[in-house]
Length: 192
Image 1: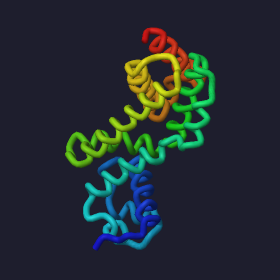
Image 2: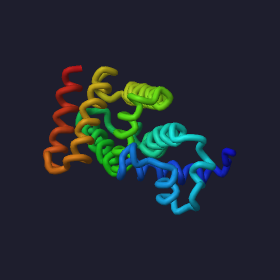
Image 3: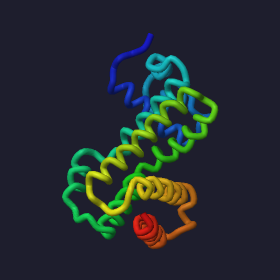
Image 4: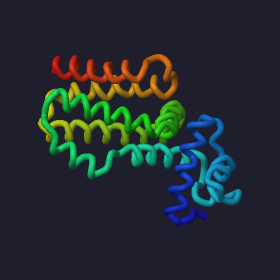
């Protein structure tokens, strides 16, 4: 029987994200999710028919939590349309995504799992494609310099910078990361 308490379902998915980040995909069990969410044993299995549903739910939820929100998007529409502003927006993006460390690490685990789970792969592909398309649309509507290819290249470059920051933070200092963001914007946008 699938339960319908949406707040409980969200709490269980958030717990799954924490388990994925800490224990990896192999550690994601209903029991581990129940313990992380501090709910009675068997609760997660009442909300999710199988582990694939839990993985898929976690994949969708990470993207929900990474969304900047309408207030931030509205503020972005009021800033100057130059490379300096673009650089600051990208630094803000890297900081926002990096601040949800467990979500991003869980997402990396989910991406690896997606190579073996077609439904998870479908969900993540749809979410990533929608995210890329939304970023391009927002960029084009904002009047910031650069084109769709520049946006895609920045997404790819900054994603790897975030991976470095979250997995091997000693590789680059904070100052080096900020310089790399500025260089990526400058070189990719200037070339676009």
